[in-house]
Length: 115
Image (cartoon, helix red, strand yellow):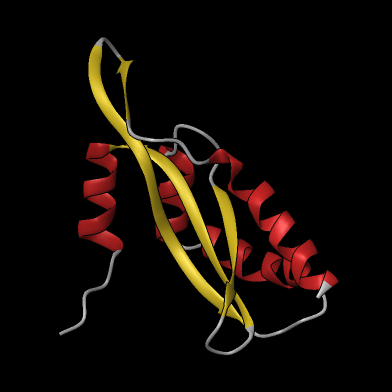
C-alpha cells in the first residue's frame, strides 16, 4: 500500500507541466498552442519503471516522428506515467506543447488510423 501511495505521489509530480491551450505571438503572428500526446507505450510491472522507460523513449526520439516533435515542440517534451489496471503495469505517454499547425501536420503524417 505504501508503494502504491508513493507511486501516485510521483505521478502527480510528473503531471505538473500540463497547461491549457493558449495563444502566443510567434514571428509576428498569433498562433494557438496546446499540449498533445505524441506517443504512448505500455510496460509491465517492473522494479523501476522510470529506468525501464528510458529505452523506449530514446528509441522513439530517433524515429522520424520523434525528430519532428523534438524540432517543433515549443518546450521540451515530457512524459507522464499512469498505472495500468489491465495488466498491473504502467502506461507512459510523451506529451509535447506545439503550435496547432504542427499538431495537424503531425497527426496527418505520423498518427496511424485503423479501420
